[in-house]
Image (cartoon, rainbow over all chains, first blue to last red; front, side, top):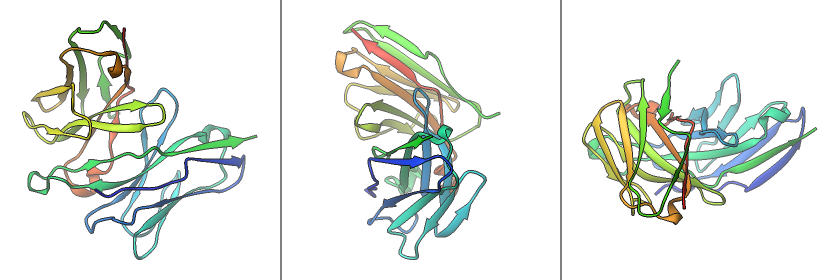
Length: 115
Length: 115
């Protein structure tokens, strides 16, 4: 199983850029890298997904080096409302014959934004 | 607006009761998932389904069963609830296509307390 390792927690001041790095040494050729955000008492919410190099959307950027063994989620100018748990996931195609694709969540990184 | 709806936000049951947690999605997704989330343990996959009447065990299937009779509905069943099944249960769905399968849509969760 492709497994991910990310910091348990991070603190940041409002207005700063936050970078959360995730390592996934055993990533498979078919795996995409996906990041989720979760607020208390809510289900996780998709933020961004990438395969290689750089992906940017209105919420974040995702940087993936050529070897794909790690990835970095970048949140520009965080605000208090960005306080949440952030999960890094890679795909796990256990049953390729059936075409199924499941994601394994780790424990995530708890980001606390300080005023 | 896409939606995953879980039937109950909060349930309180007694040990030994049979519990049904229902999940419905309106996105015509092939894949559906049940996770449970506990403090310090993150999200753990219980079961998933990649098609009607198909199911696969996740990481912690013991004490649970599932049913997928229609594409839009995925039910989690606790045959005989126990106190260690007190948890937040999250349902999710995704598209079958590999690139899109990484984007899970979650329901708001069902918080189950077993007394």
